[in-house]
Amino acid sequence: MNRHVNDMQHPRFARFYTAISNRAEAHGGAEHRARLLEGLAGTVIEVGAGNGLNFAHYPPEVTRVLAVEPDDTLRALAQHAAQRAPVPVEVVAGHADALPAPDNAFDTAVASLVLCTVPDPAHALAEIRRVLHPDGQLRFYEHVRSDKFVLGLLQDLIAPVWARLAGGCRPNHDTAAVIVANGFIISSCTRFGFSPCVGVPRFAHIAGTAYPTAGSRQSA
Image (cartoon, rainbow, N blue to C red; front, side, top):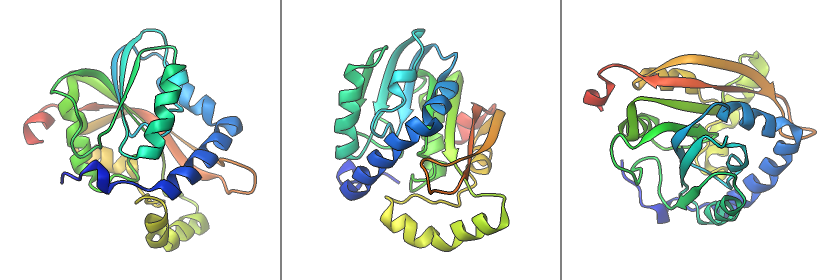
């Protein structure tokens, strides 16, 4: 699947996401992002950079970040955030189905609250494997289906409507299983509840590190 960037515009949701994500930063999200990016060095590709909230948390050992974002509204905000980043960040138009980068170009790929939204996760993960060095890593931070019965059922029930309203986001996604099923080994993964703001339930999130499996490039 190769979708044109112009087909992936959701300005209303982008404005909503910007408002809720800024609240989430003050509610604990900033600490989650800092832990996600801790210890990174060298070159990074960020897939679905959104409004650029990760940029402030990249450590100084990172020499370059290529931030890929398909939505025009979010990308403009990310470009402003890049100007204040402590490391060099280039924000470009693009999407996970066809990353604008050559093979074996990056030490790390970062996917932050994006794998729930990409239309074809298997293809996106194949693209991530393609652009990573053979010994590169994937850092992921995602909301996932709750293991609590009532919340999980609620996510299942609202999934079709939510996907239409929220740019394709699937609230009941099992992202860890998708990562493992598509050419990666998860070396660490923390599961935790997180509410982005007062009045919103603490839905399940995961954050961790994965590495491409041997031979996964040949099968991509």
